[in-house]
Amino acid sequence: MNREKIEENGKMREKYSSFQEWAAKLPKVELHCHLDGSLPWQTVKKLAGRAEISIPGDDAALRAMLTVPSGCRSLKEYLECFSLPLSCLQTYDALFTGAYELAREAALENTLYMEVRFAPAFSAHDGFTAEDVVRGVRDGLLSAEKEFGIKTGILLCGMRHFEPEKNLEIPRLAEKFMGNGVCGIDLAGDEKAFPPELHREMFRLAADMGIPFTIHAGECGSWENVCTAAAMGAKRIGHGIAMAGHEEAERLCRERGIAIEMCPTSNFQTKAVEREENYPVRRFLDLGLNVTVNTDNRTVSGTTLTKEILLLHHRFGVSGEEVREMMKNAARAAFAPATVREEVERRIDSFAAAGFPQP
Image (spheres, rainbow, N blue to C red):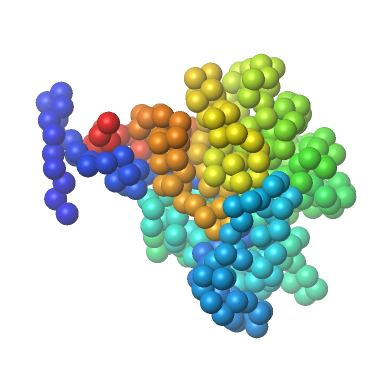
């Protein structure tokens, strides 16, 4: 379609009819996306059929089963939606398909780079090792890279409710695949019951191995967990909502350049913030924090990266220029090779120079 052009400072640039159109075309970066919570519902239907897993025959009922209910009361209740997709991700072929189709969906909304995270322990079983799990996801993502041009990385998750000794397997597993699909590690799960310091040794080992890591923190009301994660060496914080208004945590993240992986829709659903007007994205931006925007769980939360951008714009007044800066923050904070980060940032800058959303 021929776009209308406007002249600005002697250069011809594209004119977009709406912020929504601009947001859809914007080159994107996503750092916080869980594989099991983001399988397209059609993928779950296909994988369940292959595995002979009983699912609702009605597509609408299946989609409702995979999506958090509107009355969700907590993160713990939110996590209950992961049972069915996890049960479908128990073979190499299923993991390959799930990773491939997630990356395809992301590429279709102009995502240039995304990191996909998951806990290998949830798919490993007798005769099918954690290494086999990683290979399945890696190969699916690589296939999507070749077909759709997206770049990807894998974050391996330790789970908070696991014994600390078990989570030591995560950096050791990551080390085997670093530079070959895996780009870092994470700690996920019920933050309220299991604070990050319980798994200090996991991250000490990762640091010794030179493996970068992000940590879910500040999602369940504890700003202190953000400080703990930063002190342990986290390069990024998953969510970070609870640190709003706590100057020690905010200053620590700003001074260390720690990126904040914000996931607005998910944060509302899990009650990371009780009232929408208290969502701290404007505060974090004004403080100069390295804010990024992410989906967390595309299917469970019923969202896309484009929808998250529109939410920030319409509800919190985040401008197009600020959105572009958030994408550049994500590119710079990605656990990707420098060549990938620089190319992604260049393409975001190129888009910024070529077109602007209308007020």
